[in-house]
Amino acid sequence: MPTKLTWQNTYDIAEALADAHEDIDPHTIRYTDLHRWVCELPDFDDEPSASNERILEAIQMAWIDEVG
Image (tube, rainbow, N blue to C red; front, side, top):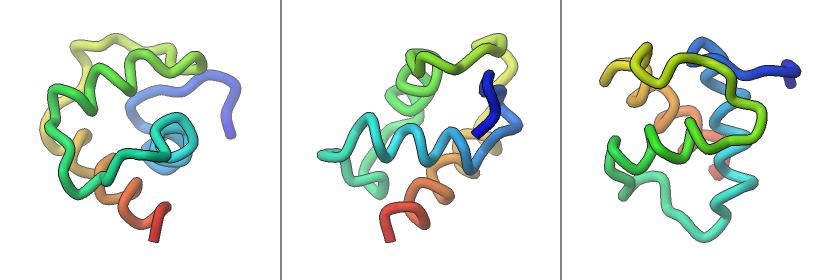
């Protein structure tokens, strides 16, 4: 995993979210929560305003793939 995560690190973010939120079903998350959780990751280092719905959807899909 990269040292610092940016919005472009979709799969690394998904992996970190799966580890940090094991009790969450990624099928049921709201993008507002997803955005906040990404920004709260300790290795996340990007502008919160640089995300958009397409990026959040890609992270959600990668998280779904991660948890199988």
